[in-house]
Length: 229
Image (cartoon, rainbow, N blue to C red; front, side):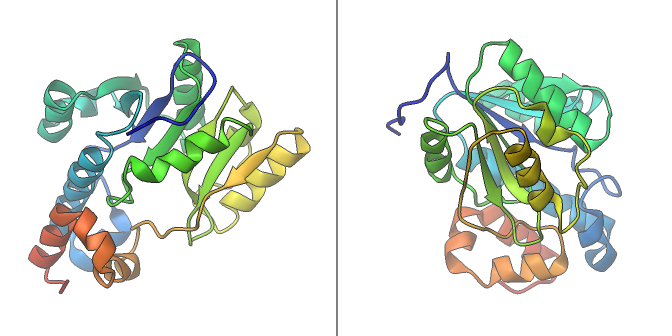
């Protein structure tokens, strides 16, 4: 991939993950599919997502608690697929994200982008517009259909986007944008996308052939869970 022009010492991509253990992840999927099937889907999300992001131009870091990095799947990504590890202590989401961005900036990375493992079809190519945006704006966000965001990119440290945000609500994105405006920062928005948090999200994914092609392990796990695709 030919990188677009960006400022700073080099870009960094943060992939926030959880160990795919039954009862520990994808709890909204587990209510309908069961904890085991939800954990298998979570593992598939991480596998597909890490594969799709390998072509990212810059450093790639898994963000998870230190103990979770010992999970076989995450340990393999760290040992064999070129991911670094940004270990953090357990904390509320805003504090966790803020700490990850702060550590990345202190290490000299600029800009820094963060995504979760809830969109397994997200590719490195999809992140190119975000890098271009950060060549001219302070921040870039990828809105998700549930009112949150699937991507956050910052050119430099902006504490306002991590404090007093109603996380995991329909107002997460709106309040974050208000914080940016109030602090005098500029931003771009990427196209709206649907991440996979609920059974409805998963069925929408299975109805989109383009998304399915980018996430074959997720499709296989969904079929094992009894969902057509």
